[in-house]
Length: 452
Image 1 (cartoon, rainbow, N blue to C red):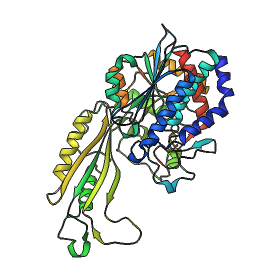
Image 2: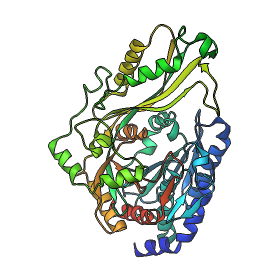
Image 3: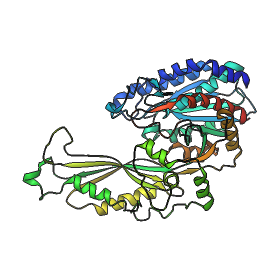
């Protein structure tokens, strides 16, 4: 192991330059105009895996390619499957970035770029850990498989069919994913829970075209007003979702779980400051961590209607659109929730407009036992990498493939994230702490040894 750690230390500067090259590729999977750039990122990953000694296959899908790599030179040893994604979120709003989103910039001990934390930087941690082992020892202490997709940010629609079709080839004793965050700087964490998600678009159509709000206002329904009224009625003043049946299958937190959450080193004042808000909000009767990790929510992700340019234009808009999501917790069923949502919105919508609801993507919530041997191996690896034992946390986010991998491969999932909560994933000035990046490489290198 000493030789591996020495190889990692000697390669720190080169690792950073390689990461910059990866981050420069604007692999925005949701933008059809950047399809070629997404493929370029897939090629970059595949070529890197090939250079370090893996067998590699770039698998075509109806969307973006899946990169599969493997090193299976340790017969009789356990097999670890690593999952990650090379696609990124759109960079909008570009004007809010301090430096260009696809020109990686180092400042204040972090690397700034779209994808730095989610998920290119964390994917690259695993590539460098494998490279260090193979360079220093000429082998890995276990068998290693890589499953790196290009559609996570648009719902992983083609990944589950791939997993179903190739379940035997993907078979592993454990799965590791680094697409989450630590609790705080200097506080390593092991993720043991994810919320699920339902995401959809709601369109309200009124007149055939925008109208003069003076000439026609008061005689025709305003789609923007209608949509806002509907959305406002989906939550109440106590922060609870009003969709009938929404909470029917929610698994309540146990007293022990609430005590464990309360014992975590969470500073609410610092959290507010990091987010730039004067007060927190959410469902009454629960702490901030409980609301983030173990309670379901309804969120409006975007609104579009009418005139939003500079100056004024007195129109009655012809249409309005909202993107909305619901985060789910055990034991909520995404299909039941979306059906209840659709029924509620249709009931609230007046006959003076036309309503269309488009389902986009969803995933189930997930929990991992903390006493599993693979979990304990990850605890030891994080302790070695960061010099202190990790805490068990959950994530309010969703990783769509986690439940599919759990069900299809019957393997434990290890969520070992090296991001920080304030690193602006999906927002301007996304970044990754460089100390966490380098310690992350060491941690994953230790994980390979601890799992054997």
